[in-house]
Amino acid sequence: MKAYTYTSNSEYETLTFAKDFARTLKVGDVIVLSGDLGAGKTKFTEGILSYFGLDSEISSPTFTIVNEYKNNDISIFHFDVYRLEDVDEFYAIGGEEYFEKGICIIEWGEIIKDALPKEYIQINFLKDSIDENKRLIEVSVF
Image 1: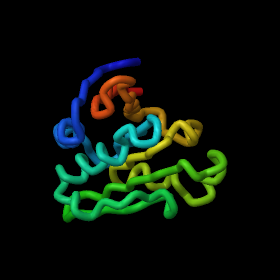
Image 2: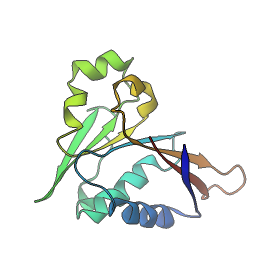
Image 3: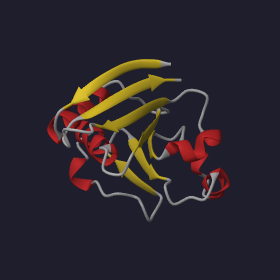
Image 4: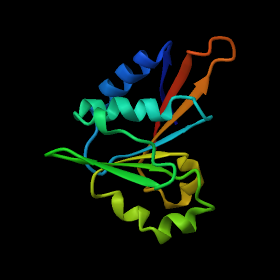
């Protein structure tokens, strides 16, 4: 179910949208980010971390699979499951155990769709074919 579409014209607008979006998040929320390489998934994550005062710490978890960020109140788990062969590898690292411990942001989450909780937020990033800075960001809640 498509809930909302936002048009971003720059990295700054993507960061600002993500920071505003982060105000609604709470422990147990799972956010799945999907889109081509360079579409804005990590930039969006940076915006969420910024809201929680953690933006200076971001690094892509491409090789570690998950990075944990923690402030006094909340843990944020940033997954990049692009390198996983299938959902069984996610289960093998205990990935689903993170869902209740904090906010989970999962890049390429469609790879582990079967492991996702019943309720999650899907965000698709679509690059514009003409303007390389423009993105359509589609937010759906399941």
